[in-house]
Length: 445
Image (cartoon, rainbow, N blue to C red; front, top):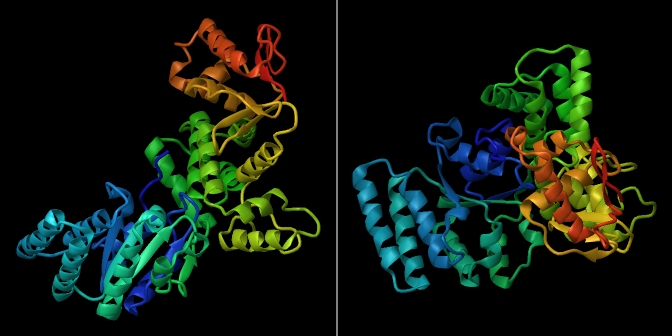
């Protein structure tokens, strides 16, 4: 699901970046996927926002690079700088630099033209020139190593007039680091800011924004339900808003109705594709020792690796600061971690899903890949293990609510049959995916 580009809260993070920039210091912001890094940088770089007054903040979306090369990196960056030049005459001068970069015969010439462009920009824009590199993870890992020496040389040449800000899912210090990358990382190492989850008031504003866009209403009990399941992670909050809004609609409800709705939604959230996608993104952004620490969170006498992992999880606000009995930030991600514990022991009998990889295991063996519909069916039933799911719930969660009147029993039976052919040793006598006449289907571990 597309997360809103608006920024909710984050005043302290905005202030941190602006203070670093004003003092001519490079910095880095780190946070797991969909925590609001892009919204933060876009807000800071918006010329109409108060934060953008003073230094010249330039938003550089590294995902817009057609390839992970030095050439593409510097051309994309200069194209972003061009948009901040205030007059047509200056933009025309910058266009000559851009054309020269595009026509350059090699990366070295592109870098030289980029340096000339920086000088041009510094002559005509308020200093410092602050290049905000969003989605920088892949660039840091895949650009030619000389790129980082070039960035360091540019900074050394122009000093505090040229500032770098990086936004990444993972801390750069935890990624593979060559000598050249180290030269660049030294610039930002002392000023790494980990993004917190949204505060309750920010979550309330986020939900109100979602409700206005989706034309649904959330009661106080709804907001408490959302915080309980998603805490302040924007991606998870939106996933719960979507699931809740699909049931609540716009009218105001009483507490009894809210309780019934929450029970229904809670039973389906574990298998909700949007929830699973958000949790998988968070999991993917964590380090191996952090995975290990989560899998053994409440184990007595943790290893030193678990201690290091726990520190990383606290830095990223995945677990709280309770040293004695730390807790995972949200119920939904806690459930996801529990699923990963099961997946980490694939030798056990039964059906297990590695949600991160999209793989399905049966009796310790990985089965052949499932189609999208097949996987959505297994994922939905897996979230409701040992519980009967009627055909309406299956259609709504596998095909979508708009297909309720379009998918008949025969179509469901054919999909179930295809899945059985892949997960059952004897599809004619299913052990795991069983049917109950007149009631629906059930996945049994």
